[in-house]
Image (cartoon, rainbow, N blue to C red; front, side):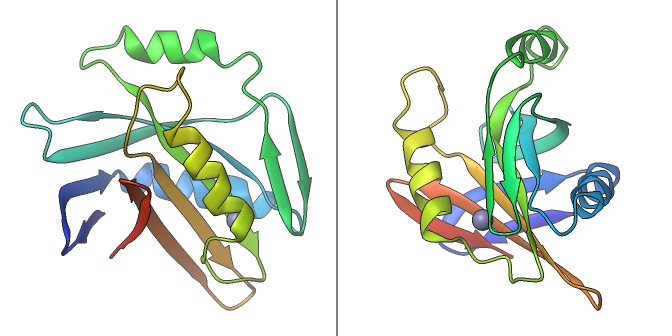
Length: 154
Ligand SMILES: [Zn+2]
């Protein structure tokens, strides 16, 4: 799938197999939220972001309305992706909204802002993928943070 936003030049590509894998994993945790880290690489001219993999957290706290992941133990996995060709990086995060829409909550917005301002994370435009779902349907919300503003991709 390819996602675009009229105001932002960056195009995001996500492999379909990854998307369906993430959705499956997320739904298995119903009725709780669940999520993970997104891994990918930028094109040479920096106009496209290709999201290729996910890392699941080893430790997390989850309820039907909350998901908090810990980064404990993910450094090794990140290093392995970094050593691949092309080099892959942490590019953002995903999480589910069971029985809800893929609209960022106040907590989600402060989480992505703290990622942007975190000195150990070298990305200035993190991606946030929210998977809203209920019995009838699944809806994806793709967001990218640019200069302290969150933009939805379609
Ligand atoms: Zn959320």
